Image 1: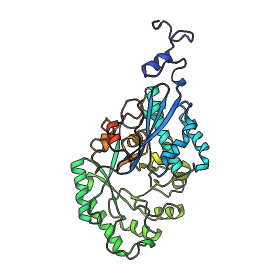
Image 2 (image 1 turned 90 degrees about the horizontal axis):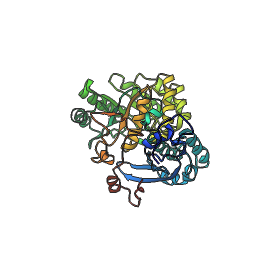
Image 3 (image 1 turned 90 degrees about the vertical axis):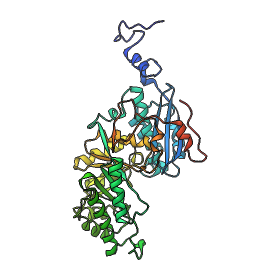
Image 4 (image 1 turned 135 degrees about the horizontal axis):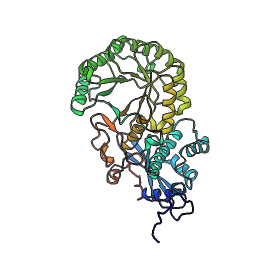
Length: 412
């Protein structure tokens, strides 16, 4: 029987507007439209990138599939497998309810922090991709719309001679001039030749001079062509961190990241308030409940949640909302494949206080081959208007680079 378009507003009509919309989205036109869609399976595949990326796919009875990614970590795929019974049969449009459902169901495995939160994050990202496809809208629209059309990317830089200030400056210049980035980051927890005992976290004067020289050479080389941040990876004592931050106040430091271990927030607050050098923290905290203390105590100048680790897209937005109340910018930590990188960019466009999203794979020649679309161009991610995240896995590349023993996803 042909379609009757005579009265799309008549609830008794053969085809309602909702059903017609469902058909245009490729969703089976059941009575009630997209609300009738159910999750049928959740699968993971780990890809051996510069980190072991855990890709997540959620399948539905409508034939629509959502793709997400969880931060790397031992046991994440097993935890996602454990969660499957809690989401199969559920409606993928109920993202918040499913998220809280998983947090409650996984409380015994520690859903307050750690790899359980990371595993939930991977499912949550895939749900945003899936819901966007079902509703025929980009994922950022699920977060309330966008503030900007493209999101800035900062490139985490490395060189074979990371302890050599001139080598770091050379690489900074190359990445800016040849690769087109205007935002960079370098490591400062590198050997200086002045160490006596690195276990005690104390920085000797020669070590501080060496780190200051790296900062000086890099920032002087790129000048106003790029912002440059520097990462300490939670290495130093409180006193040493304060002395290092004070030494760097005369240079154009975008931020100094994680100068002290993450556990003691009182020390973190003291270090941040002791210096004019901007201090960034956040990738080793979980959910808004943990990052809220950093922000409310003004123990951080820039907050750096890792989206596929901290709880997912909406949880990162909640963190940004708290940060915005304290006028704190957000620079998302990111060591992910193009999938979670694009998901982070969708969050970045949907929050007012976004500075940049990290890119940690510029030395990996096939990173962008993992998806069919271009992700980063001239140091920015243009936010796609396609439904969901706007990226499509290249299954040949996924299969080529899978971790040994992994199985490729089922076809949609």
